[in-house]
Length: 327
Image (cartoon, rainbow, N blue to C red):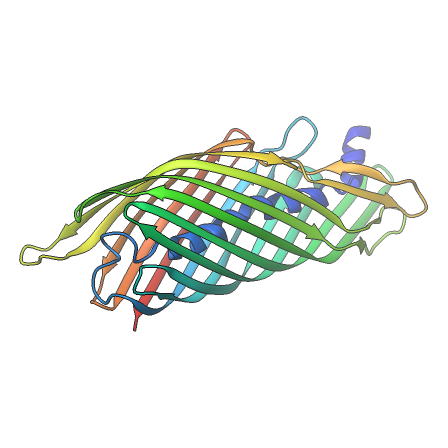
């Protein structure tokens, strides 16, 4: 009973939400890098050549951090809309901007806590390919509004607590790849590095002052290295020379270092500060992608896909649909 009371009082959710934000950053990063690679492979290079493109992308995602001996299972799901524009130069270099908004909702049952995160994001990307060698990079900045609700309920005591504060997630990333193959089949081994930083403002929970927590600003950093291979099979119709359908798949390995468990330094009113760890991000994970792209016309492209991340410490899944129009 005492351990359960301490767990409810701990405010673990404030650390776990930062772990979720760091791990969830991969969906925005994947979208930016995917756009940086567009037009630089056999399938997407067809149709109208160099010039300006606009696109819209809907993403749904969800997953869980399993927790460990000291932290609880954290489940979350969400969605976001992204829009962007990019320009491809005659020399093949592609530059672009993207932005969007969305929401994440999470639940930590064993800590009687839940969170809601509303976010807006901006980013830029650049990519180019020289012979088979591709170099792609980008940077994104997300502003988040976090609402955390906790319930403390043990013998003789009950309290409902809320904490509202802002956060920022910033990430820079770079990817190197080498493309092999021809018009119908291509494969690309790649190596990717990302530096992800999450920073939250200070807060003072509202509710029963005996259980309410306060904290100054907190930050955590993840360094992610991913290596893998992507492949695509491009199909043409019976009377067509150009391909109109592309079947895509990818498999990789992701290693994380840095603040795998986001630490939150917080205190009760008039008491010394203490540190609570959030549920950890997986140190090692397998990443997998499946997708299909269809050229609806010489100027338009529809893509749908799935992206998964699998580890003992937790899984994350995402699906997206993106429409692109070339001018």
